Image 1: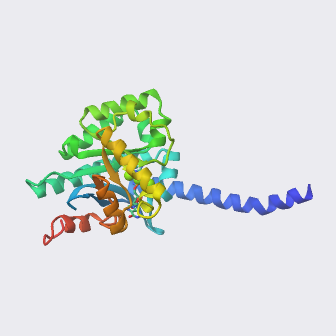
Image 2 (image 1 turned 30 degrees about the vertical axis):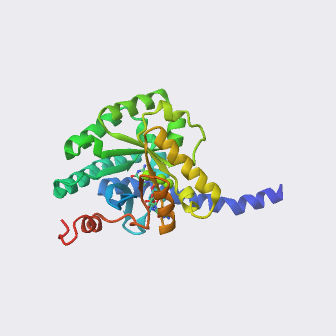
Image 3 (image 1 turned 180 degrees about the horizontal axis):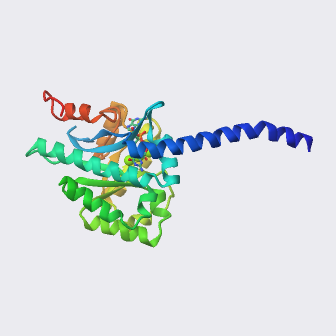
Length: 281
Ligand code: C2E
Ligand code: MG
Ligand code: MG
Ligand code: MG
């Protein structure tokens, strides 16, 4: 009993501290929404055969006044837990559509860029999601086929019946759906028949080893062929070197993104990449 008490004395302050931090983070997050402390980065998605930019993935960042730039994995879970992901996610969607529409207008006759936005399961729990998507498109003037909504496998596998209906309503707008981090979730492929998916994003963990681990190469090529058989586009995530690129391009992977091409860029840096010689707006 004495030992138990000692242990208690050791753990309690640690727990209290982490609970305290959690509460502070939550308060900070609420303030961040009111004060617009979020920013987007844009990572190019490249056509592997030609190297041309076909689209962009919008990735959120939190510019915290004291703690600096916070990456999404450090605040999205809390934002989901507290429901704050709903206003944050809506802002991401509107801002991504606005920015893509503006770049497309400036590109003129060139093939329009698509923009990909990550969606949390919590956002799909809301009945108004299709309306939110529709109004982001209407407000920005972005054509629906230029918007891609990225979902994870777990979101789709653990779905409720309403989820499928909401995704179908979003699809009916003309928006495309992508499965993010493909291959890392539940190994059930059955959902590919039930869900109106357009794009498979091959997880970085496969791409990392595609050049030197035979099993990773075999799985990657298998996923690409699965995509082709189902008439889905395939995007390889996290391409970091020329060897990975040539392995994927030779294997007929259509698209890719990764530090080899560009890191997620500020909108000014993205603008400079899209319009060399132009002054940022
Ligand atoms: P994700 O959607 O799979 O995004 C790809 C992540 O891989 C991004 O991390 C990107 O910066 C990183 N990445 C891209 N290329 C490379 C590479 O070559 N090497 C390496 N090491 N990493 C690369 P980021 O921006 O930190 O985002 C992490 C995750 O946070 C995203 O994974 C996504 O699940 C989530 N996320 C980001 N923005 C949002 C958002 O607006 N809403 C929601 N719900 N989730 C978001
Ligand atoms: Mg993504
Ligand atoms: Mg991913
Ligand atoms: Mg990921």
